[in-house]
Image (cartoon, rainbow, N blue to C red):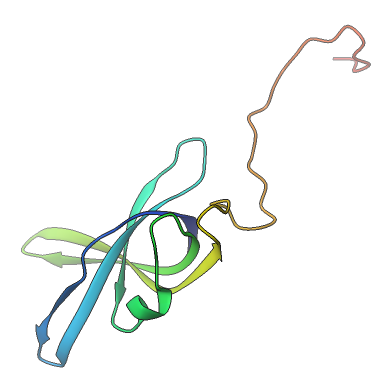
Length: 117
């Protein structure tokens, strides 16, 4: 699954020690381009943090996996990026190239309209 948008915030890196060694995690907030923009918190783990080299304002497309798990009767959902590609510089459009922004339909009455209905 892929999601495109603009990086609006980068959260602090978190690291720790587990049974398999040390781990690193960093989350960033992506805002999707649409009439009603959505904000999605996406996490990156390990070396992917350095590979992505994200900065606030970057237009990116993230390949993600969404997973939920249960703990003590509550469900927790994580959006994890396994690949992040930059679409352009900081001033670039937040949308993937070649994708047009859908416009809302407009309806006007025109006396010269040739349609029979």
